[in-house]
Length: 175
Image 1 (cartoon, helix red, strand yellow):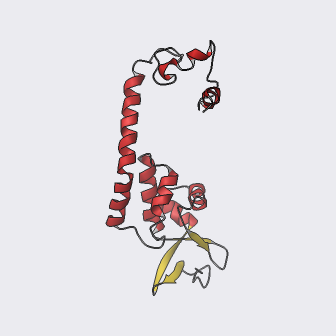
Image 2 (cartoon, rainbow, N blue to C red):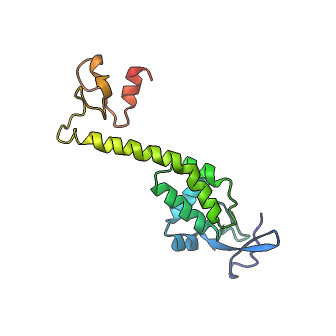
Image 3 (tube, rainbow, N blue to C red):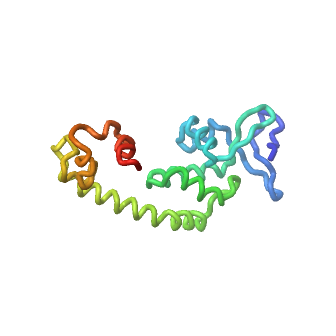
């Protein structure tokens, strides 16, 4: 789509689609109105979560509907939905239209099972952490968080997990 900006001094307007002209926002306007930093907007665009275009003067423009889209992204992120899943779900929605209540209901329903599973996993983690407070080593034979079933104890003495992500343990077990 090509923008319909006739001059950089005109009120920004977006492309015409289905006989309707869409109001456009600059990246600064979108950032100010949404409360999302410009760098994050650029990141979201690179990740396929937002869609923008360039004017004849090479200025970035975004659909006004991006404000609602950003709200959906931020709410989903706060709920723990990974960006990959957010992108997959939002791909079905047009960038130039505001998401409807029905759209949001569909997105929420699609995320419900994953959110429920995350809540259950975090609840188990919280409940298991109470036994570890004060331990400090997280490698004892009964630690269900870092070394379930003392799997690493069978490999001999000493530190087996040198990185916080646990990649060394995966390599040691051949995962």
